[in-house]
Image 1 (cartoon, protein in one colour):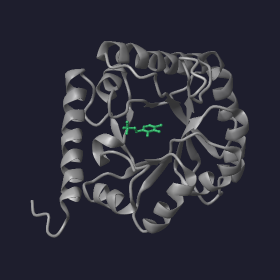
Image 2 (cartoon, helix red, strand yellow):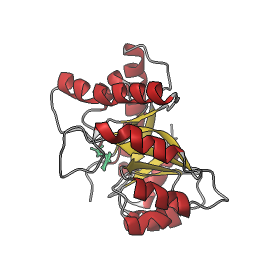
Image 3 (cartoon, helix red, strand yellow):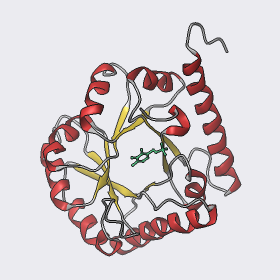
Length: 237
Ligand SMILES: *Cc1c(COP(=O)(O)O)cnc(C)c1O
């Protein structure tokens, strides 16, 4: 493959994406999951629009941003590309309108008030906004997310909002270097989604879990969307 006049950094991004995609397919196979059942969401926070463009050239279409202001300029610069933008950061009330107008997914919903504001601001010309409820199992005050005991009530309420499309659950676990412990941590979200689907007769299909340091355990535990930043783009600015 000829890279033309692309810089060394660009080639790095393309090679890292190739490597990760190959590893994802191998991990799917090794735990008997269907090929392509895990989607790669490239987390581009802290990285430039031109790096996103390289990842797009390498075939990625889904990109995640955590901070609205930072994301806005990149969305503007890349508005001609058919990118599916995911908002993965904490959602503040005063940012709901811009998020609802510019993103296809929001992963960090943990309060009904925020869901309602996103619903009310979602333009009728756009498809319903895809939503994941963020669950906080570890009672970590530093992280947002709803207590697992509250998930069913929140899901029921979100399901009644017509401009939102509830897709599943998301988590950011406590850091763990041990892969067996990472797995046990992630499997709690898989079990919670199964229970939720069972109790409310739903078919929610998304488990947003796994980052650069723990995504293989997340796939083994059932993740359908891994959110990878530094393993693709390198260290953040
Ligand atoms: C930054 C971030 C990621 C990506 O983290 P890496 O360790 O760089 O892969 C994933 N999910 C969320 C919610 C993030 O904020």
